[in-house]
Image 1 (cartoon, rainbow, N blue to C red):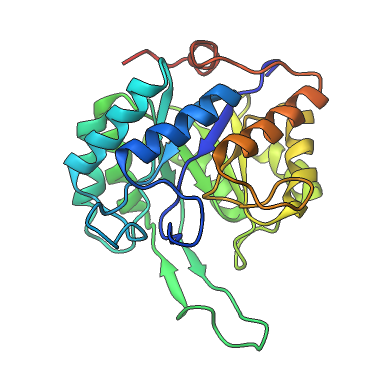
Image 2 (cartoon, rainbow, N blue to C red):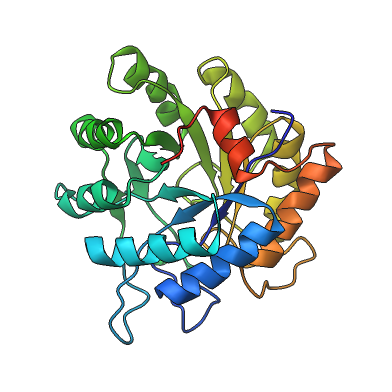
Length: 287
């Protein structure tokens, strides 16, 4: 890609908004998305949060919450593309499917395989009880069927190399009609944030398939963002992924993070794609 498509990961799933600059309400999401849009973001990756007082750090799958938040973002950011999360633990995916059908995002995250989701504290104890982020094939297929129904492009979230290789099987088996990859790096029990690993992964994607990285960490993630820009990928950051700018300072919100990401693209000699240009590059039809 000559032009870099920037995605803002707006808020994430559990981060406490009382402690971090994470937007929750429709108005907050619209304001933060507009700041990212003005900095060059063409895509907003969105999680939905409970709107009752004091509960903004917990997820919501209420369709009306999704409608209100996405509507506010689209009104604030003309032409912006929406990338909706679908990640949920367990077999009941009725909530994410209902939100997909109501919002009709241009892109939807498709978690492409299961992962033991682990993290240790410095004293060797678990940061949270070990859990399985379960994404068996039948669950993935149910999501893909609805994405196909509403015309949303699946973006396959890949936490390890086996998941990267599975995406090709999903396409060749007919479960999906296209592949867009998101290499997730920085989960403690998944792939590390590593530019050399990123270079090794690229030949394992389907020829010509668009890709990006989700890099979770602090200032150490920025050299890998730069390498992703040099290698021609889409670029993503936001307060879901990090709170830290390249100089190590804590960000005030999504706008400064997207500014820093745009600088990576420009350092690689690439211009920033507008939302309309992003649609054309990715072959997406306007809603």
